[in-house]
Length: 171
Image (cartoon, rainbow, N blue to C red; front, side):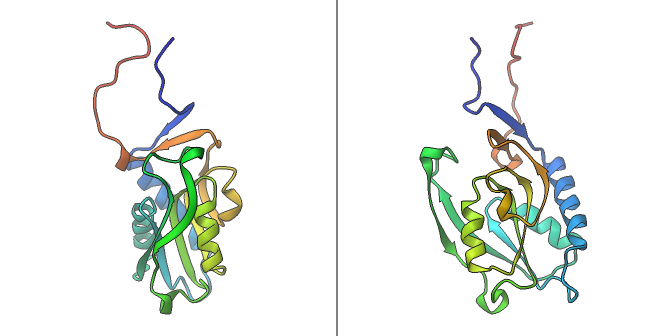
C-alpha cells in the first residue's frame, strides 16, 4: 500500500497558473461590469487577495478593500473542522452599500458558507472566484475552473519546492 496525501484528489496550482487563471477571470468580468464600471474590488482574505490584486490591475480598478471571513479551524477544510462563518473585518461601509457595483473576489468557493455570509451582507455584489466546487457554485456569479467536490486545491502560498519521492521505484 502506498502512502497518499490525506485528500483523495489533489490539484496543484502554481503561481504562474494562478496568474493566468486570475487574468482569465478579469477578461470574463469585463463583460459583467455595470455601465458605470466597478466601484471597487473586495478581496475575501486571505485566499482572494492575490486574485483580487490581479483582477483590479487588469480592469484598472483603483479602490480595493478586504473582507475577512473565518469559516475553518486551523486544520483546514475538513467537514469536522468547519464552523459557522464569521466576519472578522469588514470593508468600508460607505463604499459597499448593498454591494451594487462591487466586485467580490475569492480564490475558491468550496462549501459556499463563506460566500453565503458575504452575499447576505452585500446582496447586489457580483461574486467571482477563480475556482469553484459544485456545493458552492450557486453562490458565485463568475468563475474560471470547476473542480469536483472531493478535490483539494493546493495553492502556491501553501506550498514549498522540495524533492518528492516517486510513487514507484527507487532508482
